[in-house]
Length: 167
Picture 1 (spheres, one colour):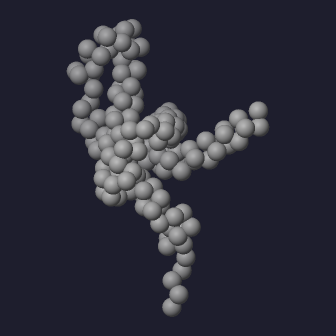
Picture 2: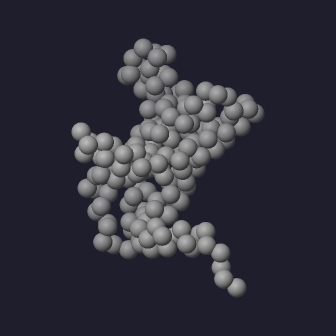
Picture 3: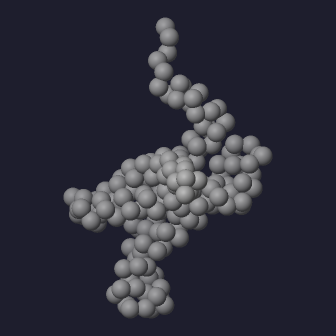
């Protein structure tokens, strides 16, 4: 039981950085989405959806990090590692975005197949791709920083970012 609690604690700690980062990202995205839809205010429901989305992406990143395929370019240079991880994470994000769009249609059409058939006509493609592009940009930033921190070390990174320069 003690080993399980230690494992759970480590998993929760590992999940915090991507979850907090994507919590901010998803709130920015839902604000953009509300502006696009001419809803110049952010509703409580979109804030809840953004928070749930961040928790899901945080967990998805942990799951993706455990995949052997993600470590395919570990021995290559930094840019190859970043591009590969962004590609893999991007697949996960696309799947979650697809599910986000299809779930309301399933309740409308009472069938996954019917919802999937009508998805092409009912989706707001401009919103979908704007959010997908912004997510991809933020994902690239996130992966770049994570990989950079792995190279220079957490302590060195924190010192570079937060320590005052001596004059």
